[in-house]
Image (cartoon, rainbow, N blue to C red; front, side, top):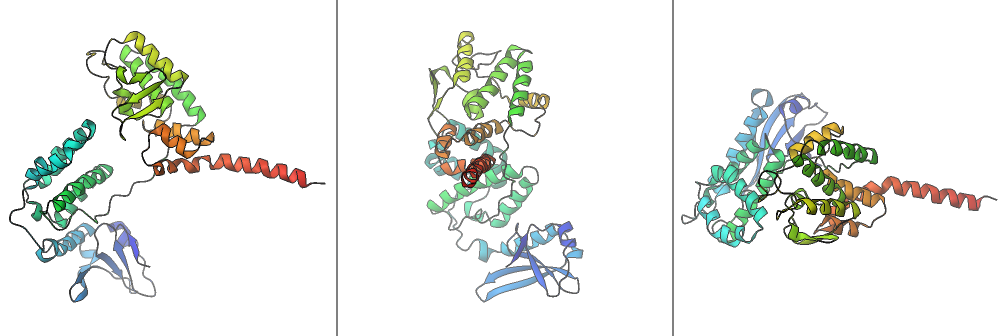
Length: 381
């Protein structure tokens, strides 16, 4: 089985010689490897497929160049015109013209306003500066990898999301007949550790106390505390509560018109209804949580207040989105079936909810112990 890892200068220095020669392949740039001989020498090499078969090229000892230099050398080899642009078209539009024209009409204009706002920011900050002045058929894999690596150094998760956006745009360019292949495909995404953090009962109690103290600081702080409590009580996403309108409130439930997965209904428990009713007595705005300074707009983002509250509650590793995980996790531990939990969270794909399946393992183990003890008692004479 091929050995693969993300090559680093320190990791290459730790590679130990074995009785037989072996190669470790880079997960970042396909075709780049480090060959380790029994003598202890380490050499960069590049492997690629050609019409004549697989060809390997030595890039020299690892002691003479960094892994980033070796990656650039591999990408320059892979980006030769005969490999990356086999059928360039002279009439292919510029990237910026394509996204402002055919792609905008066919894709962007059909999205929700929130999705449009995010994508507009992505285009203006990342994709247009990097590729806007290039013809679609001149965007090579080398260019995409260089941009992706540079962005990944500061925001690896953000780079993954924008790479997906670029792939979608270029896939539409293929559908329009401007290019034959997508240079953004097959580029490995940055790995991110899976996170399913949720609050314990003791942490929920500390958070409740910290919110009480925060609410006493000002009217704006009181609204922020109510928003955070509603997130914990309903499992809603942040913007579903921050931008909640009175026209979406209908007695004991919310009729959300612009959730991430489309319109959905959220049932309110007793404490959630109490918060909404308290706001109804105080607000003359269209928004449930209006800005204190300008009731015509919603309350600002609660991320900064959340940093203060979580520090006071000694849960500084908890993200605001983890309150949503807390609702799902405690529901699973109470024996709520996963399809029902998916409905509560508004998951379009129930597989998203499977992340919480393991949370109930301790409860299942305890139940198995109780059942086993009872059976053992029945078997005893």
